[in-house]
Amino acid sequence: MERGFRHYTPRWPLIDYVEGFWSHGHYAQPHGRERVMPTGTMNLVFRCDGSGGASVMLSGAHSTHFLLDTSRPFSAIAASFRPGGGFPFFGLPADELENLILPLETVLGVEADDLRDRLLEARTTLAQFQALERFLLARLEEHTGRSAAVLYALRAFHGAGRVPSVASVAAQTGWTTTRFIATFRNEVGLAPKAYCRVARFRNVLASLASRENIDWTDVALSSGYFDQAHFIHDFKGFSGVTPSHYLRERVSTHHVRVR
Image (tube, rainbow, N blue to C red):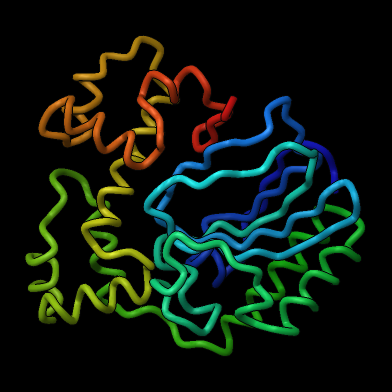
């Protein structure tokens, strides 16, 4: 795998489910751990370390940060799914993976071993991307797609302006609120309210990347928080650190070094 970060856009129909593939060859850091911020989406990650060990891991939708071991260099290639996009590929409700990272073999058995071997055998990063793409295309043919109600809800939650209430979105789908919440959890991996809170936090992180002089009150209000105290409480709940600590120790938008 070539050193450094690379990105690959999957072909149709995967692009409707997968935001993109990425790889990082020889990820080496002077610190031993990083906090990885929650995105509310699923990821499929193949990781190789310097000793030759290799694994394929399935990461469910997270509503809180998790710790990444960076004490030794490693290389990784991954598929980052769109919200609700990972549901059709793995044959189980997405909420069973909430805040979990599992070996893919515990979900798919020998198919996971075959994918790991194909990724190990690929001689270039592009060949690895293509092997991962073929695997997901084959899995997509075997499973049903997402419900129209959940797709509608995701568009509504990410639309411009004030985020609508869960009850109002459920009513617009024609479903009961109970049925809507259960189906949303099943396909997205988080309850609708939890997902919307994580999505707002993710938007905050994206906005911080382009700001030089940070006015935290302005960030809080422009992001839809009632006040700065509520913003800081949510930020610490999702990231495990204060906003100022995040700015000081971030390695990238979603990674923060642990000293």
